[in-house]
Length: 538
Ligand SMILES: [Zn+2]
Ligand SMILES: [Zn+2]
Image (tube, rainbow, N blue to C red; front, side, top):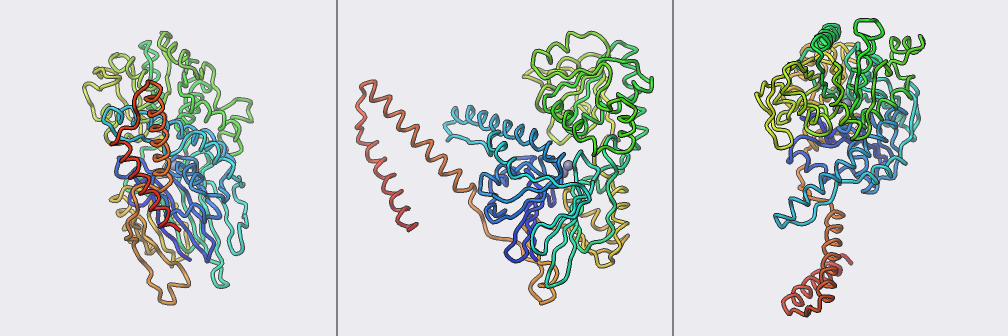
């Protein structure tokens, strides 16, 4: 069988692998590239994904770096099935539409800027409506159930313990009468994370795709982190101050709700106001409550005891802008959890503007802050940061807590790999910054003597039988692709033409002479060029 590494290699975003067995083609993950213009250009060039020829998309989990190009894939003709867990489907429903809205806003912004610079019209990668349409392709499966998908192809989703609904995917493929097994680790969770279970152990397999986000790092222990958070909130209460926590809407926000709830249930904290100020986080929290069968034992026990682990006394979910603004009028000590997690967008910016300059306030950073973000500047000790065009002094207490990570650290990854028994196992190390993937790859080779590779973007491989027949094992795709798919260009052409017609109509109404000889000539040239192209296509 053949594979092609389409994303999430030598970078953490854009996860996607194309697999082919005879004429049967399918993808594992279809993530969006994020982090800089150069990388994000790839989001527009997904012809190699072969949208129209795919029978399936196997989706490990709902994070946008794994699911974010699904609406685009459907727009380009994907008509297969998207297989994932029910919780992943539920989360995708809100996250993909949210992502569509962001794409629309982004295009709008580009257009405002572009008009001034005289550039052509920008169109969104996909819209909220496209995202909604793509939901029809989803088909949920249960954890641990072997599901036959096609002749000689079956899959099983195992709990990856990363976010709600996240999965490790096992794939069995029949090749010339022999059953072969592939494993996709997806994103592997940190053990002892709140709410979700620990990652499932896998022992058998021949080829493994292994994530390496934190392949070179060790997290602080969970217990230490939880105690640190408790101390911070206690201190804020003692000084009648607020704790502001920028958090990703999915999983991290719910982890914080759970942890604060535990403090209050156990009496370590009095019932204080806790504001969850992010519409996406609120929708995600509802989905968590609906999928309580995915919770770990500890969380199940809280449920069985009659408490809701995601509902704490004093919690306030603020959906509307008015409700959000009213938070500033509450002078009681309390906690505000808001998105985005890297302080670059969303309501968190308002809360930072309100609290960064107050000496008594506490800002608690719990997630990864990418280079260039406001969050990163705060963590790096900036004296002021710019928010809404204003320089805001940083006087509040700034804390960074590492133990809330939703990814296994180096030790976690090595422990998970140690359960694999096949001495001939081959591992593709992916989903990590290049340097980190290479480091983890070497470490695994030294420690377990497995064959490891850090694949290149668009590298193609032949697995199993054909290798034995002497067909070259590795070939890197060289062909250059056009900058944008044809459909984008055609859309743009349509819009330009319509604008032109409207303009001419307006001029005519004003009584202007529209038979300008220069215009006439230019339009005739365009007409001839299009006709020539039409002939060429015949
Ligand atoms: Zn993830
Ligand atoms: Zn990921």
